Length: 238
Image (cartoon, rainbow, N blue to C red; front, side, top):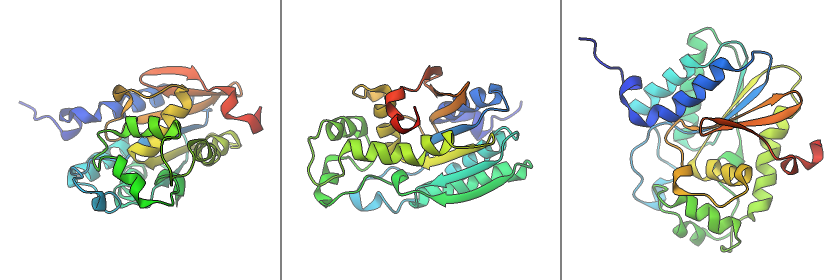
């Protein structure tokens, strides 16, 4: 009897599998970006662990497998949060992709993939260390309930500039892979969905969303469906 691999056995990998399935069927001539949550880590129980925690060995292993399963038709540019679990995920994805013959353009840190800017450390007391209330936190942040943190709309525009704008300006069909945390990923969902988040919107490890440009229009793929990106998110590119 054949033993199941970790990739087959781990339930949290379903989000990554959904993204990969869509990518495998995407037209090769189209550019695409991914915004994904880092891979598996241990439970965070204290605020002081939020910026220092790296991946588990399982997390590294399945990040490599994720990279191996990415389509090879495009060169990849990886962007990541400088927090260990994110750059370790990016490095492992690059390893797996290169192992299969894929070409890496570069790997660069992005501040917007870490967290919004802030002036009061106390604001993070509203976010549980392990992210159980991340959707609620993003909703309250977007509704201007917190002081001492970058306004949601300001962060939204910086995130758009770092991700969608960069994708739209490509002259060749590259793949941009952004490795981030719950917080920036959920902020992007609030931005794309234009509605308050629900608990079900939270992504598992290596889950996330994709955007491609089809017929000059940005198309969002998330939760196993495609939908147009609202033009109001890209005022400078209309």
